[in-house]
Image (cartoon, rainbow, N blue to C red):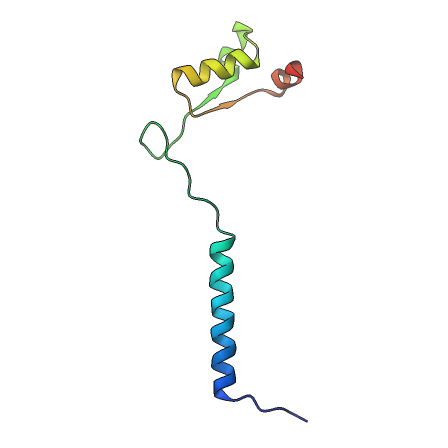
Length: 84
C-alpha cells in the first residue's frame, strides 16, 4: 500500500536535511590556519639537514629554529631516533 507524501512533508524533510548538512559542514570544518609570523601566505621551516654537520642535537636545533624565527622544523628520522 503506497503512502502519499504531501508537499508539506516533503518541504519539512528537505528543510531538516539541509539544516543537518549545513550544521555538519561547520562542525567538521578544519580550523582556520594561523597566520605566519612573517606576514605572508607562506610559513618557513628549517630542514635540519642544512645544519647536520654541526652535530647540535635535536633540542638545540629546535631552540635555534625558534630563536632565528622559523615557523617550524623538519627533523631527520635519525635525529629523532638519537633523541629517543
